[in-house]
Image (cartoon, rainbow, N blue to C red):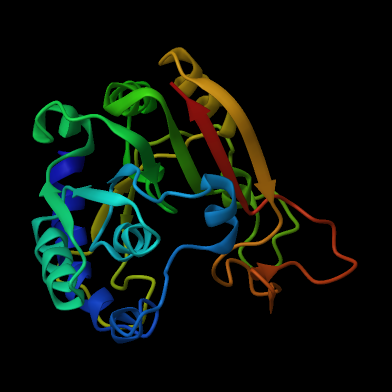
Length: 262
C-alpha cells in the first residue's frame, strides 16, 4: 500500500466536509477570527514582519491566522483540494499568502530553496509521516540562520489510553505502525467519506525530540499540556483553553509543544 496516495485520497475527500463544518467555522474566520490557539501565540511570540512556512497546512486557516498576526506566510500541503480552498479563502479575506501543493518531504525543492524565519507545523500532522528524521531534516533546510521550528501536537501518550476514561493503558506506546484504518467519517461530523482508508504512524515524544536534535537544531523547550482541543475521552470536561480530565482524576499529558532553533 502506498501510504501517500491512500492518505492524499482520504484528505482530498475530507476537504469539502471540513470547509463546510462548524468545527472549522470558515465563515467566522472570514469575519476576522484567529484560529491559532493562545498558547501557540505565546510560545511563538511576535511574528510581525517575519517569514513563516506552515508545513501540512490543510486548507490554511492556521496559516492565514499567522498572516493576520503580521507574518509573511507560505503554506504547503500534499492535498491539492486543500490548497485550492486555501487560496480561495486567502483571496476572499484579502490576506497575502502563498500556498503550494507538495509532499512535506519535498518541501525544500517545491519552495524553490526559500528559507524562513519560522517553520511551523500544527496539531495532528506528524501522525501522517513515516520518517521523522527526514521531516526534521527538511525543517532544518527551510530555516534561516537564527530561525526556529515550532511544533504543537497531540501528545502520543494519550493514544495509549482507553477512549472512555483516559485512565487505563490499553494500547502499545511503541507500536509505530504503519496502522491502516478504515473509518467512514472524519472528525468534524457524520458525513460519509468517499475514500475511507488512511495510514498512520505513531511517534513517541522521544522520537520527535531526537529527530529534531539530530537535524542540528537546538531544542529550546518541550512543554507538555494537560488540555486538548476536543473531547478525546468521554470524561473530558470543557474549560478554559480546551478539554481536561475532571478535577480529582490523575492528569496525563494531552498535548505538547516544542521549539528548536537553527
